[in-house]
Each structure stands twice: as C-alpha cells, then as structure tokens.
Image (cartoon, rainbow, N blue to C red; front, side):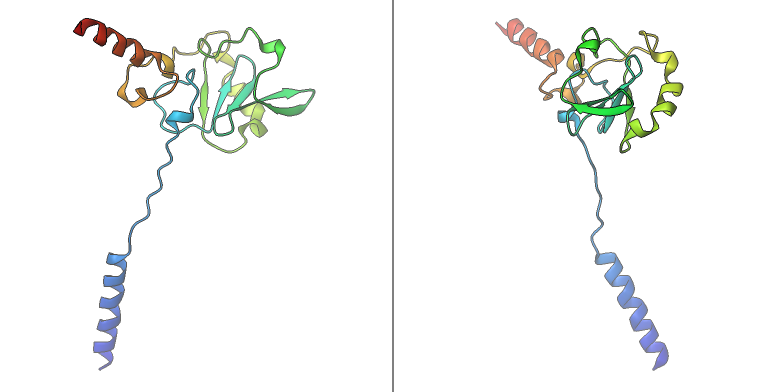
Length: 153
C-alpha cells in the first residue's frame, strides 16, 4: 500500500508538471527605438554616446547627461550639444537600469570611440532589413517602396 501511494504521488507530480504551461517573456521594442538607433537590436534600454558622455533612455525617450555633477533627464539635449548628430556618431547599446550611475566605467571603456572613431553603424532609418520595415523613421523601405511603385508604371 505504501508503494502504491508513493507511486501515485510521483505520477501525479509528473502529470501536473507536464501540463503546467511554460511562461516565456520576450521584450521587443524595435518600434520605440529612435530612427538614429543602430540596427541589429530587438530590445534597447539605453544608448550611450561616447562623444558627449550622455545617454538616451529608449522607453522614456529621454536624454540623460551630467550637468554640474547632477544627472539631468530631459526630452532634448541642451544647446551645448547642438552640433551632435546621433546618425553619424557611435552609439553603445546598454540593457541594464541606470547605466549612468556607472558613468566612469562607460567613459573609460568607450573613450576611443568618440570623434567618429567607433565602428560604422547602420541606422534604423537607413536600413532595408525587413525587421525595420514598419519602423516610423525608416526611409530605406519608403525609398524602396517608392522605387518599386515607379517601376510598375
């Protein structure tokens, strides 16, 4: 009888575990990434700009930069960065909360990537990859679609 109960409990546990649904979480935020973001990332929390030692929070659409030893969170960069062009400068993808709190680490690690010395990155805006076809800032697909429509006539 004891063996029977043990076997029954074992079989019940196996059956319960097999029928339990698996939970898989996938977080994709391609559509909320800015058009100047580099291609190849399904999810981005922050971009780090070595050129100006600033960050961009993708979910909140805010820039984060240091001003007089205080981190400032704003929707646009201040005038002193008016010549900065994110399409032409290197961006580091960071997927962790509040990377600016480790600013020294990122500053040191990517010091050689400022002034256009980083590897070339294709922006979402200029990509012809199907993954970015419906991105609001993608001009690559818009040009492709326009050319295909022109060739049909």
